[in-house]
Image 1 (tube, helix red, strand yellow):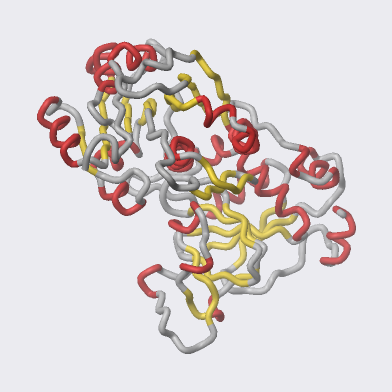
Image 2 (cartoon, rainbow, N blue to C red; image 1 turned 90 degrees about the horizontal axis):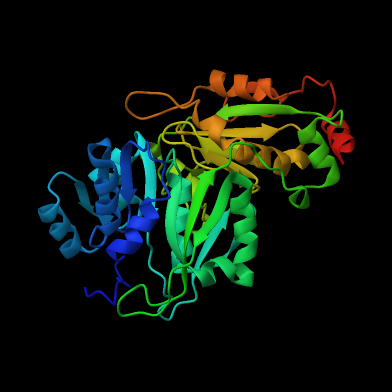
Length: 385
């Protein structure tokens, strides 16, 4: 590997100090850089906050990782591919980042180098994104730092027309602030227009009326007397028991790894007799909270690590998914456990009930029952439109 093949233009010390300056003066806990390089961002954090912070470094380049480990033996340094789920989760730095994470500092690769970008999904956005946004979206989906993400991003990733729908979706869940734009000659060996961007979880949810029908929005705001009944289904199939070679009729199998982007072409399959009917809005039961995944594929077999929430009225699925996304910060507090975090059906049902939904816990693989609104399915759909 060489620096150019990895798009490795490392952050100069003065710029790293400006990035770290965006964090509160009382910052404490772990600070992660998932593309650490020479470690300048973490070194600046350690210089400013001293022993109040614990630097966590990940880099895909084994040479860079070894160099960091030698230079900073007090840091947690891992050689891993941040974009690869298995590699990332196997790294010690990543595991440490799942607890007491104060901030994520990020200077991701910028250049396309001949490819057309990566297809990504975030909220209601689906499309090709630049490498920098590819890294950022992985961080937003999988990490929950108290003080947010401070990133150095190319201005093209911020200002391009095709990126605006994505930033609108990000803006529904996060406060996004472009702090400043350093000189185009800030990175030795490259001329690139960049900005320091601070991205912090929004305290109050924003509901995008443009993504919902007027009646769906009325369901969320409580302005419409509509069916708000939900069926909460805990999956029951362990991932190790799935057998793709089974000759009986099958349906796609969804595990927590599929919540980040379900690809039917590469999905495993499990017996259809264990399946639940979609549409389903799915979240993890075990592990860190992730944004909801909405499935409209007919039948799906849920892993025992997944919870599916199914509205009795299918027409409010988009409204439910948007509501869950808007309340992600509160949902995260439901996940408990000293080892792997998890959420109980009772806790989730109580959370939904407190917000005015009518949750009913049902067994996996069973047909939908009646709703507490005492409406038929046809009446529910008519009420919401």
